Length: 247
Image (cartoon, one colour):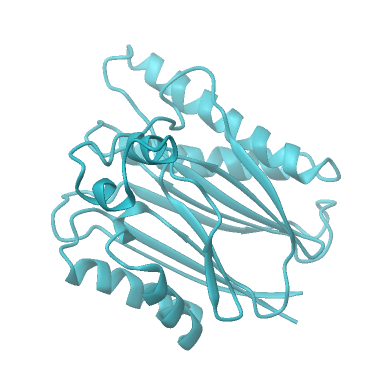
């Protein structure tokens, strides 16, 4: 399995600091992972919280280190544990600051190993898979409005304009315990394309993502997605990472 990828991150048109972070990692040849094992991560420091950028960068470092520290173990379990360890690191850093300066971040991680794909996720960054002509969101947003929508309290249209639509119900680093969504996606097929992105891309519709990703090389697709988000206001930091599976 051959993997190509691109990534692009931008501060946007409103924010002064880019609090997004990302990482693209390959296992060392002698690390016991097997040929071609990869890990891709996007993290978005929580807006309005000080040290959001520090939290997202710390999360990426810890997830990468923890994940590759246990080759040969169950991948899904290892990926979940990596996010749990990152949560502990960010939370402990916040406590060292006296707890007065809260730190938090989303985290979405895609692992590829021996032709299989695995996903771990906390927050409202997203992962999509483009297979054939269909694009599918592979993650659930851990936000107040999405929880209300799943409970039948809000329609999808009402979610788009709700004043608390960005309130997170689950994030990495804001408490000592963390619930992680972790899924085995099955075989990564030749031609599959994955998109990991921060919520700065919320202005870009899935069908637009599908068209851009299907018609462009990975790096150009990432730049085009972020440019479109900025054209539509750029109210947040935007990060796009596109991973393409080849035979």
